Amino acid sequence: MSKGMRTHNDASTSVQDMLSSLKDFITNLNEKNKKIDDTLKTTKVIEKKLHDLSQFNDNREEGESLKKYHANSEYKKVIDRLRLENATIRELKEERGDLRVLLQDYHNTLEVVMKKHRQIVSQMSAMPNMEDFIRKMECKLNDGCYKVHGDMIFSAVANEVLHDLDVYEDANRDKDKKMARLEYENQVLYGLLFNTFKRKKLLKKCLKKPLNGNFNSNDTVVDEASTHSELFNDSFVQNNDTTSEDETLNLSSQSGYDSDDSIQTVIYRNDESNK
Image (cartoon, rainbow, N blue to C red):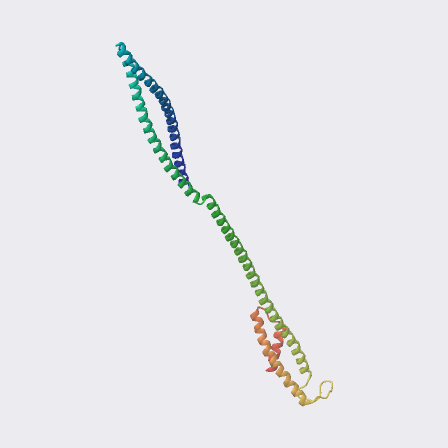
């Protein structure tokens, strides 16, 4: 753009210089034309004088022929001056013709220069404005940068939110696992305690019943068949409870909890009774 402007400025400067020189030339030409006009007027006056002189000469010749008097010196002076003026007039006419030809050349050159100048101006006016183009490109780039910046901010916020959600889900997942583990351990401990109390009651009940008689310590009549069936059922329940206790104790030991002394005592008594 700067190169085109520089070229345009150079062209404008050259055109202005040519116009100024042409103006000076036209001014000089007008002055010379004025001088020529003055000279022509003087020439006309001189021609008139020459005509008068020629008439005077004719009249004088007639007079001289009549009077036989010749004024040679004065006559020669007038003739020489008229010849000099005629030569000057011819030179001025030739110079005027040359000036007219030169003026026509200057007019033709000026037309060519102005035509070229109009072409350059039309081409420059047809060219797009670089400042507007640059401004539009800057606006588009700024809009694109703002959009990309907004997308980056949204992506960063979305990543932070997803990270927080992952952390929250991991924490809740750990909490759920811990809660499920605690619930299971509580159920196991509750089952151990419940089976312990139940087994103690059954052992106390079995110890109160004699195995070889029909009467208890309070002379109460007890059916022997029912007693043996109850003992068999109690021993079966005890065996099942012992098995469940062993499994439960193994689970409790794996979960990090120590077994209770009362539970160990009951299991020991149960083992002795089974022996």
